[in-house]
Length: 453
Image (cartoon, rainbow, N blue to C red; front, side, top):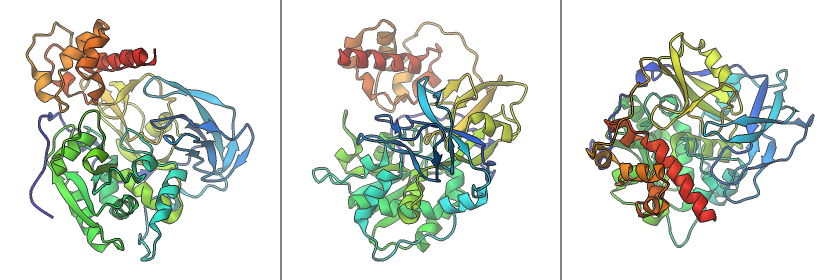
């Protein structure tokens, strides 16, 4: 492993907040009595329920199917009985249908057994493994990007002869402040990450894999490097750790490619345009679990963190669990808890209810206190240019925000509002406290509505 560290131009250094939970080992949430499996847990077309009230389903059974290519089926984490349909509000504000599941607690495996199935034990790729089996396994297993974007994984690993992939980047940066789910996975269960990375590379024909970890995670760097050395690699893929400088948003797909490979993804291009594929560490582990053990994506690790929760933890939970149960298991809210975020403080969504279920893309729940929530009054833009100086996409955030406020779609399109990754770097540095991200997000909706017309 080289001692060189890699990074991208611009970016910011917000307070990390990792100390709340980074040293807390993964704990197992007691199996919930009832789960709510949202039919829209990914970018793309929503799934259609294939079960009805009072149906009996087995563990890993498909409860909502995906007919479109850019979609991913939903599976039951445990055996149980289908309950009455219910709509739930997701963090982005969308009301979506869910498949309610009354879990058969009498026959559910223990949490420790399930954790071992998903991440534990020895991992070895057979020498005669058929690479052609990887894509259909990933597609049928409902795998999506688990870093938050939730893009269906099979779409990423579909071979494209016109745009071959030569390098896989496994994203272990976890640059979002406070969140530590990926870190704990790397420290405690590194081998399925390495195995999943090799399988992903084999699926697309890539010969190089870099597992990218920021330099504020030395324990993860050491443990993952050792796991690479002892993992079977029948496809001859070159796997190594690439150490990244700690900076936000280092884990952004285009920023990571620029940092690790020195390649610039063109707008409005995709990573495949520069021969790269980016996959989150949790997703890589899920690939290993699906391909080698037949395990659909039904569980994940979630950080419950921040100064507003009594005992911050990293929890292994079934998808579909209401976040109220996670918070309760962590001792509940402190008296000065002010705001609950699904995600971290930079890109997370503030929510007004704890009835929201965990989805495949839920990497963390951050509870901020009164003192952690910045109280500020919006003033006029002073044209300081700080937002321009930190934008990792080289945009002019104030221009886009004001165009959105005045519904000027011509300016929004001319200044590439669609290129914004909503990282929040601009709002973090703005001395006028302008709600830049919210305005730009609204501007994107305005342009989308115009294009539909």
